[in-house]
Amino acid sequence: GNSVTQMEGPVTLSEEAFLTINCTYTATGYPSLFWYVQYPGEGLQLLLKATKADDKGSNKGFEATYRKETTSFHLEKGSVQVSDSAVYFCALSDQTGANSKLTFGKGITLSVRP
Amino acid sequence: GAVVSQHPSRVICKSGTSVKIECRSLDFQATTMFWYRQFPKKSLMLMATSNEGSKATYEQGVEKDKFLINHASLTLSTLTVTSAHPEDSSFYICSGRRQGTDTQYFGPGTRLTVL
Image (cartoon, rainbow over all chains, first blue to last red):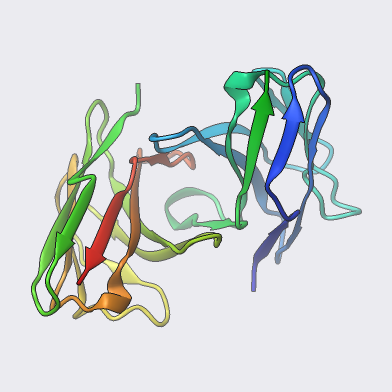
């Protein structure tokens, strides 16, 4: 079956530090890959996505590249801000259209200190 | 755009009672809605998928008679936890998706505590 593995957290960084959050997956076929973010008190929001190998998703300074050879989709940001403090979820969808469903990783809490 | 709300945000009930949670898409038509359950320090677990006007499709291991899902309109889905027990205490999250797209928009979740 499908699965998503995220690195263990929580992660605490100082403002302007470099961020990497690891994500690897197991799936049949060619999944689409997603990063969702959940800010305190809010619902999950789509941060970025990539639909095929070597695609790079980017948004708000965050980037992740779909690496088929290593089955990974690591999230990076060059300089984090306090406002990036949130829970980050990696997810995959192994189908498109009406039958698509998401499989999530456990999520990781990021805290950024001023 | 693409805002999903849930009501209530938290609820406490006695064991044996039923609780209804509403999920609304406020500014789009959600032809498909999903219900998830989240345990502490664990990933979101998909419970069921519902398409407007159709019966929900439940994931393996989820009791359909216990977790009743109704998706009567393009903007509203409800989850009713029947005869709730303490082990049903959890964080329940819904999401909606427009027809023809693969992006889900999530609600803020409902914290259910069964005493």
